Amino acid sequence: MILSQRTLNRTLLDRQFLLSRTSRAPLEMVRHLVAVQGQEPNWPYVGLWTRIDGFRHDHLEALIHDRSVVRSTVIRRTVHLVCADDFAWLRPAVEPIVGVALRHAYYAQEIEGLDHDELARIGREVLGGRTLTRRELARSLGERFPGRHARRLADAVEILEPLVHGTSAGVWGTWRNRSSIEVALAEEWTGIPMAPQRRLETMILRYLAAFGPASVMDVQAWAGVTRLREVVEGLRPRLRGYRNEDGKELFDVPEATLADPDLPAPVRFLPAFDNVLLGHKDRTRMISEEDRRRIAPAASGGVATFLVDGFVGGTWALKEGTVLISPFRPLTDPDAVLEEAERMLPFIEARTAQIA
Image (cartoon, rainbow, N blue to C red; front, side, top):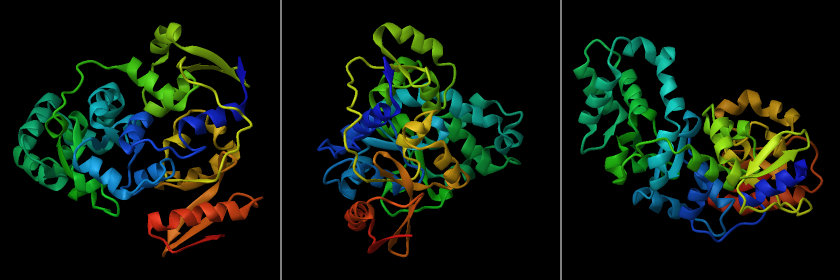
């Protein structure tokens, strides 16, 4: 069966609860999405607000404080919010992409000649039973390894060992210097042991439920993990197969449904780094290649976008209390865009919205 780009678009929006907001509990939503981009503290809140009816800041803050949700480095070696029980298998699943960072020049010179297992063991010993800021962890490691760059050692331990960030790092409006972010051993923080083996099948099935139908390359782009084709092939008897308009093979979980391509799609405001835009190698189901290149130079710093008829229609930014909306092209219904922006104003603590 060949799926049109519009069918893929509407299906993705439907599974991401961007066609209509849901009454699901925030913890259920985080679990459904597998991992919610959290490089900056405020963005996950916006991503959940745009998906959940009646979502409030304290809903997510409560989950962070009771440790149901943790903040750490997982897919694509970037910071995400993940349900604590999912983190226990997801971090080991993506360990290769996390660990490869140690070969980067930023780390290599300072850890050259060190036994990685020994560095990890001492890192666990220093952190055992307590939570330290990255600066404090670096100071302790510097005392154990004199002559080495202490901050690099602390960063290396955060790669070698599954660590999570303290609660204050994920609170709305808390923009902390990275050295002041607190870290703790994940297993001590959550009370859940790390999975002893990589559960790649679990990762792929969970991804497809929220982002499918998708290709092997799409899964790998989302996870940052390569060599998944063999795993997908092993799952093939349990999956449903499709093709896109270019003939590329797509996979899906059998219980998932496809959305009607003619469904209307409301205006939605997305945070920077939202995985609905980053979760596929082929992003044309959400953004044209022309528009992707338009925002690519600034993407490393995070670009917030908005959707019109299901596709990215432009960017937005909060400046001095005003939501500045920058469409890629003239809007056919600017009132609908402003209406949704104004609905967002109280949540992001802004006063006005305007189209540039």
